[in-house]
Length: 361
Image (tube, rainbow, N blue to C red; front, side, top):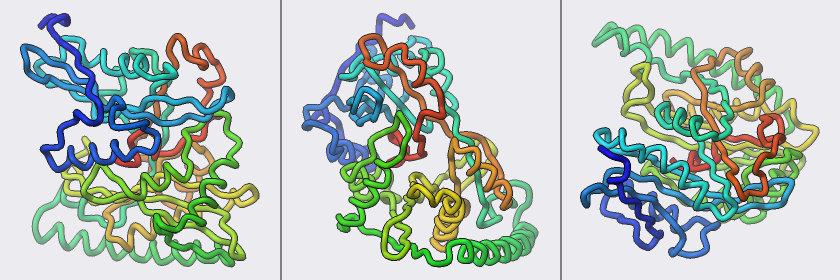
């Protein structure tokens, strides 16, 4: 198939189809994006061959904090090309068109698949890897890979007893470490707490970051690409003042990974921040997030972070690294960040798992 047989079409949010339930959730979330000007905003780039749709990618605006001020960028989601058309080169066109269509000539993505990541690397996207720490709360997903029937249930029962003892010990240790702190679930209607959280995020000293203001927080607590629901938030208070927070999401995966995990409820800690001076409490705060997800019957919990001290903390308490998540960004010609060497340094970034479309997916 020759590349020039593919015709590319740009669809606004108004033109996006909602004929499938999962697509309808995604389109609704994109239409309610607080950073979109209107439903005339570009919403998807699609390829056609002989009148047949062969793939595409959803795109949506986000804001980026930089030394040049806030810049409007384009994020991408659900990049897909039908297998029989992957030799057309259309899969390479999509990430390239994303930055070209961006008003700032900057595009980004997060939690890319193992198929999409190399494509972005070939197109000179900067790639940051975030080690993924996993804690297994229910052993069934691991045991059933190797054992069946009654034996699997017996082994799972024994392992789950050990996990329960571990979780109790972890809960005691976290309560001791966070003595004097109170963790409180927050609703999307609690403007005062959300304003406190947004101010906390804004205090971060990183030179580059995705803008997670009160509009972004409400968006992620109200919308989701998944029927499993939007993100949830909790704040951490000390003497009544907000000194930290975390956001979590819950997703069911029929196929959780290439390792063979199936039918898994996975909880993810996707956003967090602590006030300056409380950094040593962060690991224990995220432990409380993980224990909250255990109570909500998650099979496992994941935390992806580029913070090496946080990674060491999780390893020390028995969590294991299972692969990596990622964040990618490209500043093309005409961008205020084109050729910016500082942007390529991971230490200059505030990186979180909720960046791009990852908090919604």
